Length: 114
Image: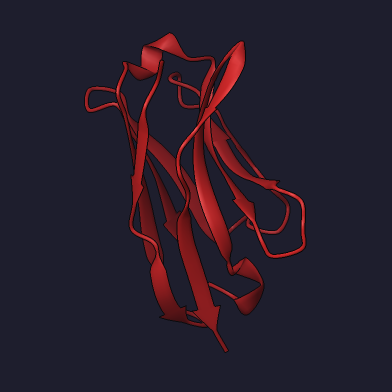
C-alpha cells in the first residue's frame, strides 16, 4: 500500500501562485512516475504534469509554461509550482504515483477567483 498526503491548496486570485506538495509513504524510486492530475466539477480528471525519478517531465497543454513539477527523491515528495493561475485552473488536484497501478492522494482544492 502507498499513502500520499497532499498539501498547499487554497483560494487565490487570478494571476497569483500556489505550491502543492505531496508526501509519499514509500521511496519515489519504487515508482515508474509521479504526477498531478485535476478534476473540475462536471469534467473528467485530466493530466496536469508528471515526472520520473530521473527528472523527465510531461505537462498538459493548458498548463505548459505556467506550472512546474519537481521531486525531492530523498524526501519522497513531489511538488507542483503553479504560477499565473487562471479561473479555469479551479479544480481538485490529485497527487498520483504509478507502478503498474495508480495510487491516488485524497485531493486538495484549488480555487482561483477572477
